[in-house]
Image (cartoon, rainbow, N blue to C red; front, side, top):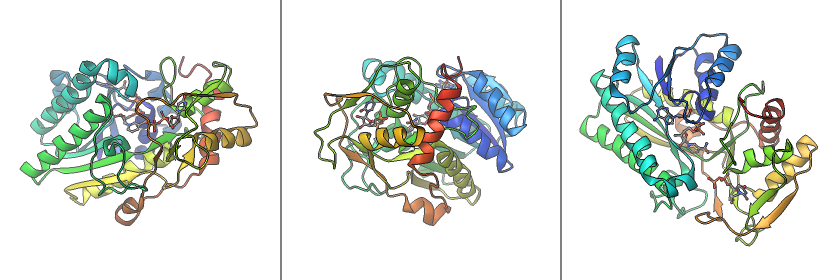
Length: 337
Ligand code: NAD
Ligand code: UDP
């Protein structure tokens, strides 16, 4: 298939490009580079030996999208583009709703004008809010989100479901990611956060590389085995492969489908710190701080639906995730610079 990849220069998008190309698909990337670098695309070209059509374009720019869609015969869109920092979404809700919601509306409008009705969307476990059941199944109701970022995911899912209800010839796959970490084994691409990392693993790797003094662990009084928060960390390459499987579903006219992409295993913050230290033989100094507002104690997936329906399951373990995160950071102490 010929796939439009929005946000393809970003962390998950760049890893997915590699898996798509390896599976024989063609890709066209649209990214405004607001949270990424063109260097990521150059590195993917190096890894895959393939030249990638790239447009530095905002998905809110319908005219530009129309020109791109006129030029390339696209069969499906994988939609990664969006802002994703939870805390920033609380302080800048307008920017988040504009970028994520207006952006998606503009994109699906342009796709519709070009007869493109196959869409895979990057959703998130955040749509479950405080999950009513653990492990979280796809049937678990969408919950009350605790921040505007989460609400944008919740609303975009609903918009795409409604498109299919109105026109059943749409095929929509909603992929709810749990906590992606790790990097491509080459160490050429990886997660490259702007400023102080919000997420656990990039913070740990920046401590390891000497950019930060110590990790701040947000709370050790949760109702979990060691008191720190438990999450479902998944290797970004496994996550990327999930998109290739989702494309198979699209090709067999799946209608609307929702899948959790996680490992089904929960690790605490201290489990991750210890695994990182053990695998990489580096010390991660840490302090225990107060809980971070909005955090929940435990969240991990039941990923069995993706296995049954798509034949996808995560293959990498926590050791490989820690090894590859460090391999990327060590080779690229300043990310893409
Ligand atoms: P990322 O920031 O690395 O990638 C997003 C990409 O979208 C960036 O390259 C950015 O420049 C681009 N972008 C943003 N707004 C744009 C716009 N208006 N027009 C064009 N390009 C735009 O983030 P990521 O971690 O790769 O996440 C990809 C998607 O997965 C996002 O939608 C995110 O919300 C979702 N997601 C991520 C996580 C996670 O923990 N990383 C978890 C669940 C869901
Ligand atoms: N966390 C932490 N220190 C950090 C960043 C995160 O202790 O600097 C904890 C956080 O409280 C949560 C876990 O690590 O329990 C995962 O947080 P992350 O932000 O990576 O993912 P999310 O909150 O979206 O699940």
